[in-house]
Length: 201
Image 1 (cartoon, rainbow, N blue to C red):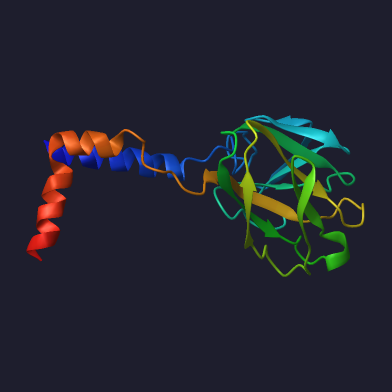
Image 2 (cartoon, rainbow, N blue to C red):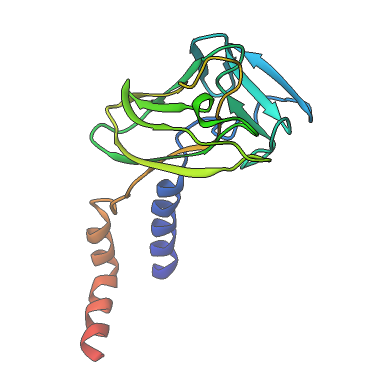
């Protein structure tokens, strides 16, 4: 019984550590037919256009997604930007990750993507495109303020041909054990058991 309780607590903490705070991070909630694309002012989960013509959602068009079927290009009809407001814990650190790919068969000067956290630039990315999407993982450590803005923007030549984004996630960088856990374990006699076991080794 004691072991089951401890396992449940630790699994709960592990689940929190892996929870993605970004809604619709792989852009799969919105239905886009295979082999088609569309330009939208918003996507499910709170993604909204903040500049430019809109968010271009693709399904198996000029490359394939890194996760699921859909991915996003932000140089839709012109360079555009999108954002999502995310609820975080004040002062907590988070791992921000996403997949980036240059557009198929396009040069680096048109494939630029920038990522911002609360309007602070985290990084710029571009590359020469290949014969298919060339996905690479980008990662940052960010700090929560309680309500934070994650924004992506196309920054290459504004010519309707640009870089791609997929598989966006924001997860706690570390989840400390609840403050009451040591006291709880002590009350169950588990800490004493662990101490005795160490002495016996």
